[in-house]
Image (cartoon, rainbow, N blue to C red; front, side, top):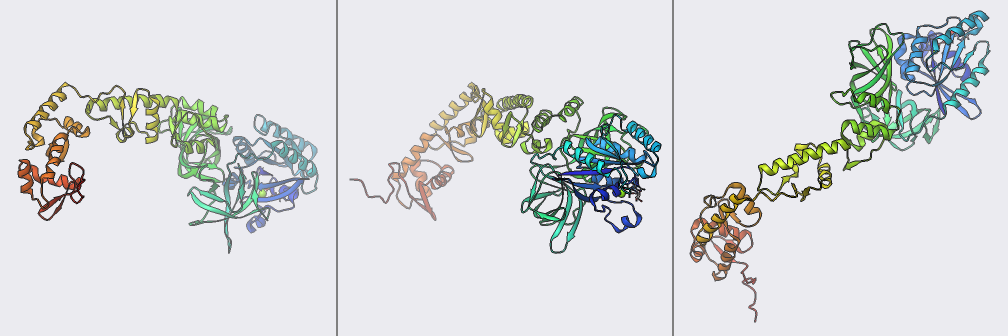
Length: 608
Ligand SMILES: Nc1nc2c(ncn2[C@@H]2O[C@H](COP(=O)(O)OP(=O)(O)O)[C@@H](O)[C@H]2O)c(=O)[nH]1
Ligand SMILES: [Mg+2]
């Protein structure tokens, strides 16, 4: 199915033509009927030719309602541009032409209406004027069809011309990314919230889950209607009413959007290419009060011109939005200046999440990216950003996937991989230099200093032949642990001190070991820590546990101290350590041995 949008100056006969073509009056509101003036969007449909059902979105032509007009033309396949033969080209003819041109609505017809009111010469002049005005625009090759819905003349030709335009436009594209910009929303007692809009990009099916943007509210499609009939599913190019249910709906406003949560994300700033309209009075600068129109929505925005002071022709702008809007690369927009009360330009979104500082070199690449496939766009965004999550790259590019280094949910551009490898090697080297006795740089520290998630760090380490990843730390393959002659000398002196002391060893802090050396010895098991200030060699621990077999059940700290010829300073922490390691158990002031060095527990029967 296809959607045809009307366009043209107020009172040129748009609504009358839609009514004549469809048999349905698109002006819905009492006020519209009373004043004979379209204020808001109107909708009608008909079977234009056998098997060619089309929907019409009828827009207001009055300049005051341009906002409503723009809400209706965001998802058009084909346009019916109307010029009254008796009035000729008027301001909103020009403005609506600019809109269709900026949105690149490629297919359509020009209805030269109200021909019953003019003579042949005036009609001819009107046709010449139209040809002049549309030259060089999207409308250049559209057929001009003289018509009068009042007398009925030309209606058959108009129908045929629209049918031909619809056929040459082809079916609305299905990219598996359903998107419906809400242009109306209301509540029906007993059914709940209903939104209407033009379906693009994919399908919606009764019962499915869908998300309302910008709030990212999960909803369920309860019912679907096309042309006032219930349907199971709607495809692209369909005007539909969608009955949704879900928590916290509140009021759904025009400019909201239905889509999949995994396929769209909102933004507050976009980088966009901008083409100004040919009627622009003064070059476009950042100083105007602008409104951005995308889909069915409009937002007051701040505009900054990038790379020059002003734009007259084409340029690039950064647009700051006052609220989150789900936008992707390639989305088309219109910019209106409230002060001039006029459409001043429009174009396509280049990057829905631009870098804080725009790189001028990125702009021509992004512009070329507009012609590219979603996959190519995703690669381009990755290339420009260096890294990004797969979901963000897919949503921003309109469904693209990237190749190359992917770690967990993060993709990294090749140049960024090279840069991160340099960072990683530098960080590891620095760490090893500053902590020569540690086993390597802890990963938790590296993820912070390099600024990547753990999965990326792992992938980088796996990729580097000269790095070793032991799970907790990363070190260079040639890292010896930095155990030099100075540490060796400290250690052998301390070891001798311990041996010379028997079991009555000095305090650990008096062994003359540096903190790094000390911790390294503990880590390697060359020293056994009993408490903060007491250590033994492993062979001394063997001697101590060997003494246990000589002790009777119910031995005291003093018994233990005397048996080992040590002082209370060593005996108390040693016994606590023995308790903790299952050698002894304490009850009150006395202990009993649970385990002896020969492996027998005291209660075991003696082996024969
Ligand atoms: N004589 C004549 N009047 C027309 C024709 N088409 C529209 N009108 C009248 O022009 C006025 C504006 O038409 P309308 O469809 O509301 O214009 P719109 O603002 O473009 O939607 C109405 O009074 C119509 O009856 C036509 O072909 N011939
Ligand atoms: Mg109208």
